Image (cartoon, rainbow, N blue to C red; front, side):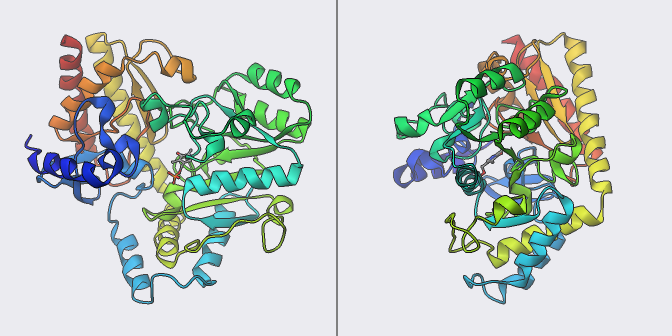
Length: 431
Ligand SMILES: *Cc1c(COP(=O)(O)O)cnc(C)c1O
């Protein structure tokens, strides 16, 4: 594979952009090679600046559930753009967006649009603190909720990939207000609540973790968290930035029948444009300015282009519930094929999957939390990643990320992926 143009661009980028990238995992550091620069994408495919073609399992880290450059989304953007790109004023599309989100996720009675998942989670926590008049929050080791200070404690995703789950620059007093429990371990949560009686404002969790690789909730785990929050007056925040509208029409909260107090959203609801949102019970949401005293604002919040792309995406998902059947079929085809490969070659690998999000972990043991995810052989993952890239399959350049399928992925592409995976795994394990 010729990647000379990407290499040249990476050299150039590093002169004026820290690490040459605008988000850390994009640098491919943990897989031991320089990153590809992407020129364009269509459906399930990506093309880099050297003209190499890939089947894409990153999907911009989650948003592209309908595939890249979906014709209806492109058309919605084209219609919107000629009317101006930003007014900093109220628009009809924002109401339609709020109404559709509330319809699809009934736990959301009111919703505020922001510009990223990071903004959504940090605003939700501020709101929960104001509502409860308490200061501490509970998060889970290996969960990622964006890069706001409060969440860079035992954080997943890129922080985990680069071995910096606790970032320098976060003050001790902020870190002291974030308590970290163990995912899928209710006892660890009970201990934490008992140790800080009446002090915990919010509990935030990825209902299905995507950011230490895909880790599903154990039976009863989310329900147990819900009950603990209710008992102790803690605001229960489901961070559905990744899972929202990905795993079911109403997100993970529908799949597991959990009613959170607040939900954070992003990724899919922007249809590939920069968006986040937080919403939930009216009683809590009413505290946000201007209806209440909790300040939160945004020059570009509810941006007309972002609303057009997001609304079109949600409307398609809402109008064609078959989408989730197709996604499940394709993902099951991939997972079953992968299982056969693992069995045929007796490979020490574990797969986790919920619907169209999944991870192949390079460990024999089950992966249920941060500690078990960290047992993965990341060097061998790196060899697998590079071999797959060479065969035209673009995976996330980190063991600790979920892969995604879109409605544009065909059966044939899944077959191609499986053939590439078998060869890549055999070669990764022969070294
Ligand atoms: C991606 C993600 C975020 C952060 O969203 P950004 O738009 O990257 O700021 C927060 N929470 C979860 C669960 C995510 O997957």
